[in-house]
Length: 93
Image (cartoon, rainbow, N blue to C red; front, top):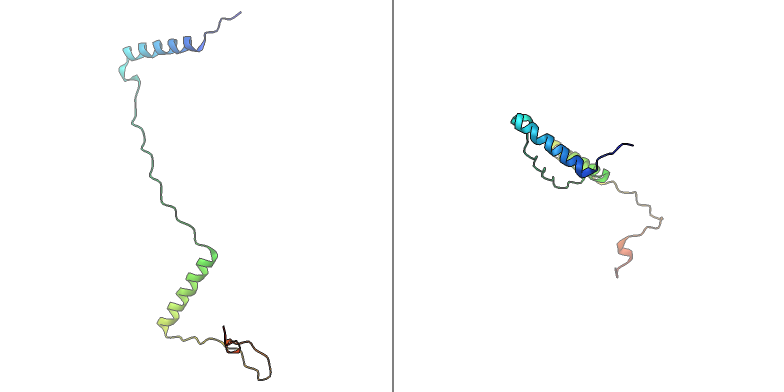
């Protein structure tokens, strides 16, 4: 039956081997400086579809203003007999 060494015996064995190696060749082990922890970047949210559409429309309006294009709002034709709701119909609001 094999007699296996326990962890403490293995640690001691490895430690003696390392010490012997360092005595014969002191440059055998190279140590490096620890890498600094990178700085966290501040959170920036991605633009939503609505944000993109808003900025696109805003740029279009600026381009139209520079070109001298004037847009007038489209109004629905007023029918004389058709009922319509206006704020004038509700004076107490």
